Every structure is written in structure tokens, then in C-alpha cells.
Image 1 (cartoon, rainbow, N blue to C red):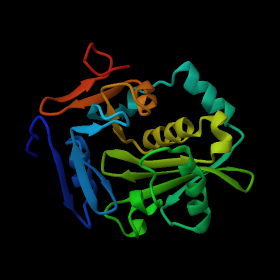
Image 2: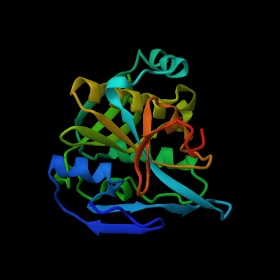
Image 3: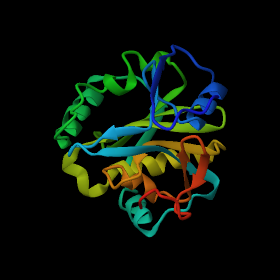
Length: 227
């Protein structure tokens, strides 16, 4: 795939993509919400300054949880989780309405903004991960599965359970899924090279970041990505 220019915002529509094609798209920095595929190099922050965007991915076979991540894993070990094909229902939509109260700007309208109107039909193989305390739904995340990689799409949780760090927990469960299925990378989405709310993604090591036009690099190797 052609390398993008230094500063860009690109998009296209795709209703169906094979797993191997999804691997190639993720490796080139593409993401998607429903059938809308996109990649971009900068965004405007809440204070109006420009932030530089970089995709991130975890090297699954080499991943070792930090002490803090191990505490999150153990602290939630009494919860039950399920992984299944994506199928939206009122319980998931209700959880999303609770989750979005965490945002003060760019508040999304609905979970379909991220998953599309019919996520069960594609454009690729998608899975939902749900976390329960008894019968109560506490958190959910959605991820796509390719031939040799997977990609996180969206995660949400009940804000009253923020102390459980369920966003980190669902990402750890996604890593575990990838390891069990022999996948090489888990793409964790976009982060910024400046400090931002996405910094928690940089704490999953070893991770790699995509320098647009130059390829994937190990995070923390002296690069300009802020930790």
C-alpha cells in the first residue's frame, strides 16, 4: 500500500474485507467505524492545539503485563466474561449511555457511531467481549479479527465501577484472546505523540508505534512518542 504524505486525512467506504486484507489495512494505519475506513496524521485537541496521531499495536507473543496490570487482572478475577459474535441489544446500548457521561466534549450519539448499524454483517469478522458481576453487565469491548492480527474498536464500562479499571481489563482479555488464537499483533487504535487520555495504551509493552512514511518502531526506543 502506498505510504501517506506527511500530513493527511484519508477515508474510503468498504462493505466487506477478507481477514488477510484487514491485516494489511491495520498494518498501514487504517481503522474503521462500520464500513467507513479512515486514517489521519493530526487532530485538534480540546485547547485548540494540534496533536500528532500514531497507531499502536501490541506484540502479543512478547507481551508481559506490568505490576499495575497484574493487579487489575487479579482484582477482577472474580468477574465473568464472555466472547461472542457482535449482536447489539438494549443492555449494551444502556451501558453505552452510562459510559458516555464520562465525556465533556465530542460526546458520541450512540454505540453505532463506532460499530455501524449492522456490525454482525461486517465489513469484517468482529467479536464482542462482555464482563459481568453475576448477571450485571459492567463492561464491554468490541474487536475485529483478521488472519494474523486483531484490532480493538471500542471499549465501554459503567462509570460507577471506574476503580476497577475495566478499560485496561478488557484490553488484557483481548490480548489473552489473541495469544490463545496464535495472533501476532493486537492493534490498540490511535494515540497521540503528546500526552492525552490515550496514554494508557502506551503502557502495554512491548508495543510498536507507526511513524507515518517510515514504518513500525518499538515504543520507548528513544523515539519522539511521549510516555
